[in-house]
Amino acid sequence: MPLSSPAPFHTTRWTRVCAAQADSDDGRRALADLCDAYYEPVVAYLRQVLRDADAARDMSHAFFAQILTGGQIGTADPQRGRFRSYLLGAVKHFVSRQREMQRSLKRGAGVAALSIEEASVAEVRDSGVTSPDAAFDRQWALTVLERSLEALRAECLSGGKERLFDHARPFLTGDAAHGDQGAAAAACGMSIDAFRVALHRVKRQLRQCMKAEITGTLEDGAGVTDEMQILFEALGGSKCV
Image 1: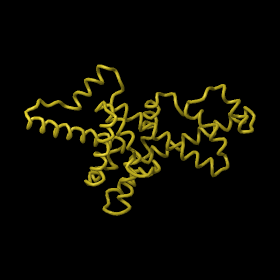
Image 2 (image 1 turned 90 degrees about the vertical axis):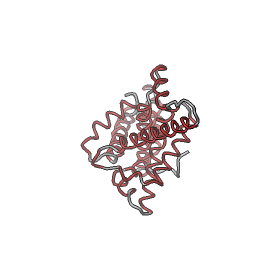
Image 3 (image 1 turned 180 degrees about the horizontal axis):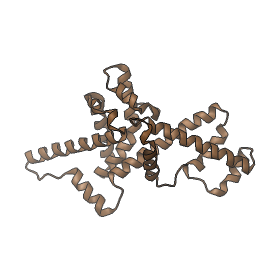
């Protein structure tokens, strides 16, 4: 489960990261928002490393608890680029430290040490399953998509277009067949041509929402195109706009 109540993904902007470095109530809230938004990507990474879902969630809690209480977020620097990359590096470092602690304990007990990370890499290589880094990126992409859909739904709701959003969503996520457009148009009280035009506009709005989510985790907007490409590749190139 997330460490606190769900928070909008846009609160993980670099300005909020900087706020999280401050010893203040606002800084602590910002840091909790960061942990909420990136909880599932970290779990996805650790699930591939540990090959155990329960252990992955336990270690995720330990990782975020350390960030929340240890002031570690102070090393996050907007000048270094993507927050996504910073967090992935931080969790890798955390796993490495846990591995060293495990080795020390086993040496003290006279037991041969086994690296969690080394064992997992061999298993991933032999079985052909998704690598930990790829699992992290895919869950990050899914999180961005879901948060962007939530933002888009809010826009449609405020504009009186909630029904359009509900029937357009399967086309935005790749879960609808092309032939379903006729039924969706009828449900919205539109002609097929009018629905296609409206769907095109909604897709454009979703892309803008996704760009806004991504831009907020970069030093500036210069790298948003590359980050969008990484996102679509992580989704398999088949989902959303």
